[in-house]
Image (cartoon, rainbow, N blue to C red):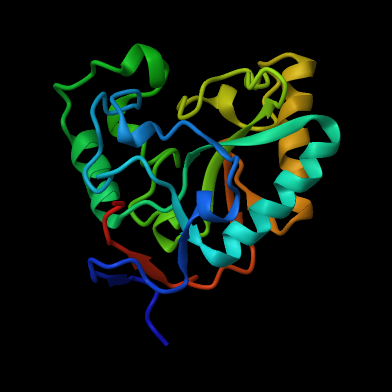
Length: 214
């Protein structure tokens, strides 16, 4: 068995990974790391195309989530899926650059940049790099507008914790709706981010991939 820290450096997409749109044709996406609209303020290395990749297991579970949401006239919107290890390495380098605080007001107004990893908002080995983790939200199918979750995606603050009491009751209810539907279909959330979910029975729990998104 591969060790916990094993990194797979092959540049090709492994056989058990898929482009999510091939499984959920109408999935809505706003792939933040393919643009400048993210906490680094620039497109992130490793994201070479606006395409979202996940393991087949995660894709099939997400399709079940989407099917359930249809009954409430809701749907998923994905911000990120598989994340190359080189992107995570870029996040580490970014956090160590104390002179670059361009995005502080928008993404981490109450956290010192040097503490973002220490406080758990980012990690040096991300579950995203294992291919079965997604960042997402809920949208109204009629309008395609996002439900109000109280904070934007990747807002590094206690206010983004799913159980935060600094948001309204409706915003907390929206977060719990997302968490409950994801949990029913085999995903597990985290304490620090309302948008982050990992497939409980992920196929690659010990491997961190580094192939680029193309």
